[in-house]
Amino acid sequence: ASRPLGADQISYFNEQWDKLEKNRRSLLQDLRRAIDNGDLQVHYQPQLHLERQRISGCEVLVRWHCPERGTVPPDEFIPLAEEHRLIAPLTKQVILKSCTELGEVDLLGSTLDRVSVNISAQEFTDRDFLPQMQALLGDLSSLRPYLQLEITERAALLDMKRSIHYIRSLREQGLRFSIDDFGTGYSGLSMLRDLPVDELKIDRSFIVDLNSQPRSAAIVSAVVGLADVFGLSVVAEGVETDGQLEALRRCRCEEVQGYLIAPPLDIQRFQAFLTGHSLQHPARA
Ligand code: C2E
Ligand code: MG
Ligand code: MG
Ligand code: MG
Image (tube, rainbow, N blue to C red; front, side, top):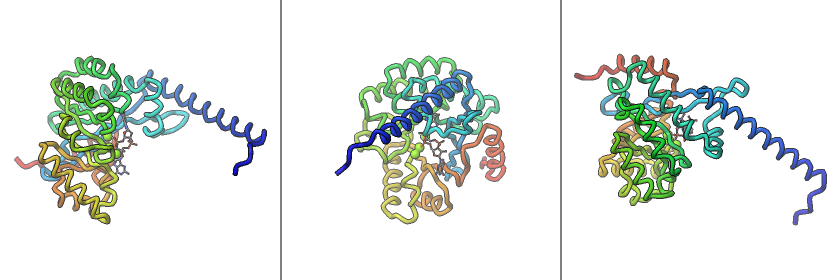
């Protein structure tokens, strides 16, 4: 049985709560300023096509280097941005910045077939998402064919009808769609049947124990098989070891992404990485 709280305990909790609230408010303030000032950075993580032995695409990951706080991880500020209607301006900045940076070094089309940007669930289910994205795409006509949006199963399932409408409309304008963290949601096969997407990203949780847990290996093989049947690309995320890479080759997984290939890199390092990689693996004519 729990005893009633004493007055000193209550005031202690109140103090802690106030502190948390204050921290959150100041984090929000700093985030708002970073977005307004265009201070968010983007990093690029390469995706390796196993059969072609070349980097075919990359995932864009937002980075916030706050002068006062140091680097704040996306898992901390994305939920805050979602909660306070800052996610649309954040995404806009991520898309414009990555397209500008990749355009400046002339990587799209020549070296990379595809650049993937994350779209959060809250954003994808917002009724403003489609018009906002269409307006943004108007300014990006030449890069549109390379842009891919990553959504999670959970986001897509919240309102299937709307999801299908959004995906259809944006694919008509040349965008591609990928299902991120595939296998972790409540996906059913009906989702694969109904959603007109282009790619599945197998969640890291199935890659982590690929070599020790036969069930994970079976799931990966099954997802690769499904992707094949539906004509989708398939990427394994979070590949960290040679053993995992070998297992993924055996499963006939098409593409891999993870620290084993490279961590997310800023544009200079990404460009240098791509140059080094193409020297190591010259494309066969
Ligand atoms: P995600 O989309 O599933 O991204 C993959 C995460 O795994 C990234 O973390 C990446 O740095 C990390 N990662 C890559 N390779 C490895 C590996 O080999 N091992 C391990 N342990 N981790 C690896 P990050 O950058 O911290 O992002 C976390 C999540 O935050 C992302 O998960 C995504 O949901 C979200 N996020 C990141 N950038 C954006 C963005 O621009 N917009 C939105 N809406 N969400 C974003
Ligand atoms: Mg992602
Ligand atoms: Mg992912
Ligand atoms: Mg994941």
